Amino acid sequence: MDKTNVDRETLRELADEGNETALDRLADLADEAGDIRELSELLDEGSMHAGLLLTRRAAAAGDLRELQRISDAGYEEAGTELDRLLQRPGGRQD
Image 1 (cartoon, rainbow, N blue to C red):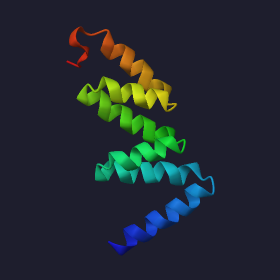
Image 2: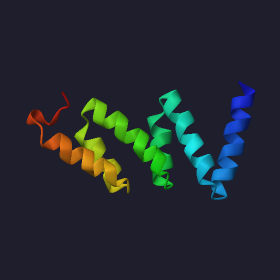
Image 3: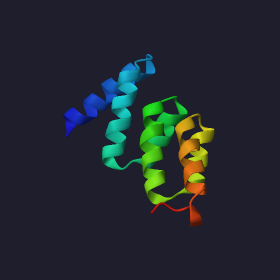
């Protein structure tokens, strides 16, 4: 487990230095852990991969407000998904 923590620390350092691949990997780890808060923070830092992962979760749950929030945070595809869901009766996925 310590190795995971070290890896996260190293990834965070690299991401803070502008390494987008490290930022994407942090998003993958947060998604695997189900850590929506961390994914949201990564999106706020500019991780479009975190936006993708959050959009998938929100779309699967039919969470229109979350899709709007993700779109407002800069991940345009969330807006596209939101529009698609809004065009369905009840705003929910089949």
